[in-house]
Image 1 (cartoon, helix red, strand yellow):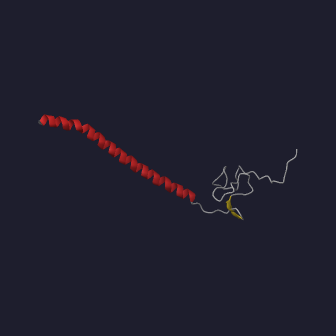
Image 2 (cartoon, helix red, strand yellow; image 1 turned 90 degrees about the vertical axis):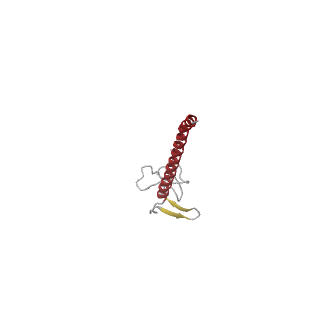
Image 3 (cartoon, one colour; image 1 turned 135 degrees about the vertical axis):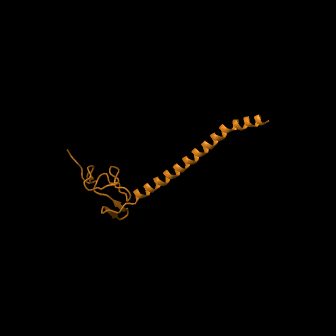
Length: 108
């Protein structure tokens, strides 16, 4: 009877060890994911908090705009300047192109 009990115990040991390792790995993975999510959200919050620079304008009927409003690529938004250089600065931007006025036509 003692041999039978020993065989059963030895037979269950690998399964118990495997379950213990799976649980330990799962808990460690969950902890790392939680830490990564906390770090990522902190980075995102810090990126979104930028001091208001001198290129912020208020336009009646539209609201606040940032960036050089005379540029062709200006997003006309209070959150991003343009698609080419969203974080700025606009001064000295190599992608600057002046807007074409609606009334001006080019004849060749």
